[in-house]
Image 1 (cartoon, one colour):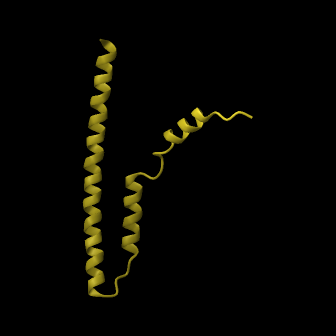
Image 2 (cartoon, rainbow, N blue to C red; image 1 turned 90 degrees about the vertical axis):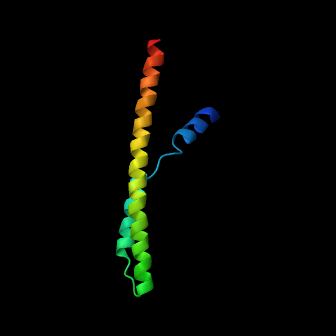
Image 3 (cartoon, rainbow, N blue to C red; image 1 turned 45 degrees about the vertical axis):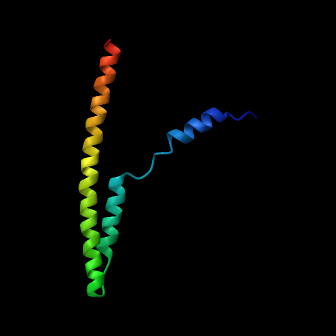
Length: 85
């Protein structure tokens, strides 16, 4: 029985980046933070800081995704121009 190492490596590399998206991670963190029940004032402040950080993370990820989409469009345009030359 012959093992094709090239195809195994290719499949491993191509499927390496798959998994939960950043939005899934943010949603899971949000649900976990909202489930917390602080028992003291200091814990309540920590939860508020976590919620604030999560909002900032959500904003940053949205901006990052917009920039990625914009860059992908530019790459597609450049590839189309290269093909037509």
